[in-house]
Image: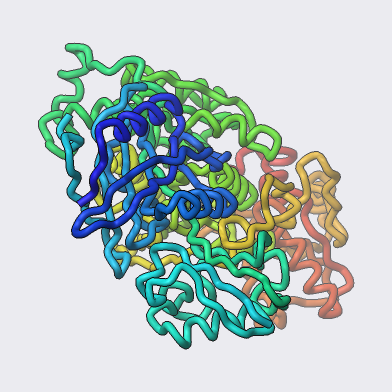
Amino acid sequence: MLVLSEEIADRIRAHGAKAYPDECCGALLGGDAGAGREVADLLSLTNRHEDSPRNRFSITPQDFLAAEATAMARGLELVGWYHSHPDHPAAPSDYDREHAWPWYSYVIVNVTAGEPGPITSWRLAEDRSRFFQEEMANSVRATR
Amino acid sequence: MAVRIIIPTPLRPYAGKQPSVEFEARTVGEALERLTSQYEELRKHLYSDDGRIRSFVNVYVNDEDIRFLQKETTPIRDGDTISIIPSIAGGTLAARAEAPAETKLSKEEVLRYSRHLIMPEVGMEGQLKLKQARVLLIGTGGLGAPLGLYLAAAGVGRLGLVDFDVVDFTNLQRQVAFSTADVGRAKLEAAKERLATLNPEVQIETYNARLTSENALDILRDFDIVVDGTDNFPTRYLVNDACVLLGKPNVYGSIFRFEGQATVFGMPGGPCYRCLYPEPPPPGLVPSCAEGGVLGVLPGIVGAIQAMETIKLILGRGDVLVGRLLLFDALAMRFRELKLHKNPECPLCGDRRTITKLVDYEEFCGIRRADAPVPTAQVPEVSPRELKARLDRGDDLFILDVREQHEYQICNLRGHLIPLGDLPKRVHELDSSREIVAHCRSGKRSAEAVEFLRKAGFRKVWNLKGGILAWSDEVDPSVPKY
């Protein structure tokens, strides 16, 4: 269960709309508490995939280290990542799966024609074979 | 030396939930070995089955990537920090239009595409994806014909065509987009006209040029999917490299005589053409269709497979031929499949890339540029006119035809037939005291024959310059050219 407040979801949507038609990306900072995982804040990052930012994102090791350091400094953990799928459903692609890690939450926002759409969250199976959709708390469900 | 290893959050559950651990070690490899010995569960996340650090794991010493230091033998100083950094990437892979400017089908289009629309796998959503897709066809020949026809018919919104050739009679046996009246016209012009009459909804963009290292990135950039319908190695490597550099799928097909191949290169996580063939074959080893022949239906089948894979990529449906090389044998009428793996050592798409821009592909494939002078064969030659004059004078000349039996049946100069490949074992049929003129279709194989015979001790042996083609042009136009 991923707890994503409406305010944070709005920030993800806004980032996706702003980056359109490119993909946006960023880090989720928060912590695991009980059965759920709460996202307390976001760290928007620069999409470093210069060849094709429209359908790829990548985060440099430097940005990764900075995100971990920021999380640690604020007493939070780096619990996952978000990115947008411009004109593409908010479901992980094979490329996402091949480049994903277990444990992290992968939040995806669909942006169609510049308008943000559904938000979903995903976790990779331990054996890396597939993604499981992660249930989301609050009103932020992929129903729009 | 004491070193601290920082564990990223996803791996902490396997490392006693600690954010970092300390070890004594002299090198990075040693430190990681200590770590994985103590926390065995970590090993499968850090190393692939062959014992190498996984391609999606970066290891840093302080702020330097060990790949740019001494890799796992990088020495450690007291107080260094090793960071294990999972590479974080993702993204969509299906082809998309830049912005869906027009997201509706007209009444006419609904009717035209109704057999697509009534299938749930395509439907309105899929048909709009097709309409927004931009596909570039390299080559409008044998593979390009079914590709162009089916993709235009399917309603792909924008089709780019690259070619510089002119339709000739030998094309018509397989390049079914052209008709007899098109002979002599630019292929691009004829193809554009044909596709536009088939489906006026399709925007067709033509690039009347040979694809080169200079223009490839600019031409490919505006398309979502590139389909390779070329017949030569330099262009195949060029298309492959440009697609990988631009992050675009490359729908590949090739044909020879009765056999075809198809696959999709350049997909995320999938192999590229260089993973399959790091080096081109030596020039001349693999004959082209012009040299080896091709059954006309074959490009129809292979091109249609490429068209199908292109449409599946656009729709985001089904299992695309990624990491699978489909082999088709028309004589046996069998399809086989080979697994293709991404090569981690690939200089273009592997972990340590050394190719970051387009190169000179003619040179890479060992072929001289067309504008460079072609060295004349180092064998003595006789021109068709000289030969005719000497035969007319009644000189005693022995004509040796080194083509194949089935070529002899097309046309011949009444020579003695010994196919080039049989020459070594049938050389005793020749009389070294007589003057011998060897010929083939174009003069290439017979030059090899002359060289072979000279080395075997024959002194009076010549090559017919330009072969039977030149004979037809210069001496006897009744001899058919093929």
